[in-house]
Image 1 (spheres, rainbow, N blue to C red):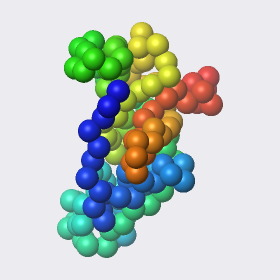
Image 2 (cartoon, rainbow, N blue to C red; image 1 turned 180 degrees about the horizontal axis):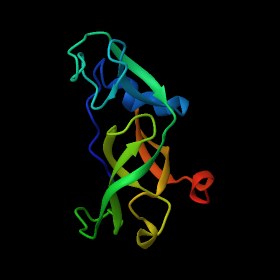
Image 3 (cartoon, rainbow, N blue to C red; image 1 turned 180 degrees about the vertical axis):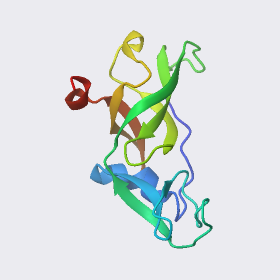
Image 4 (cartoon, rainbow, N blue to C red; image 1 turned 90 degrees about the horizontal axis):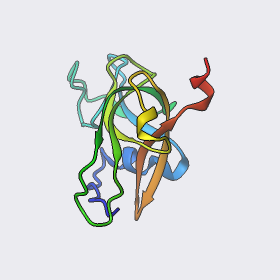
Length: 137
């Protein structure tokens, strides 16, 4: 599937290119000690400019999801899962991604996931897959 790639800026490059090192980078505020996404030059909580990308575990759970059946382009494989993933580092630290590598009928709210990356040109898209280590806990 051909994806539209994001624009890389000084704020967004650590997020979109961290996968080159197998790392998911999320912006963090040094003043209020909170992670936030999407990346920004100031903290949306306390308005501090003391922010920067910090590696996180890449582990979390499916907070919500939908299964898309629409073939938007001829090369798009359907069905696929669009999910809101909540990262383990902080309650409410969520972003939209895809869950890959599992049959769509096995995806569920609360499913433990871990990040994996798909490289397209100079961007590493963070996708999520079943976290086998936590699925049996």
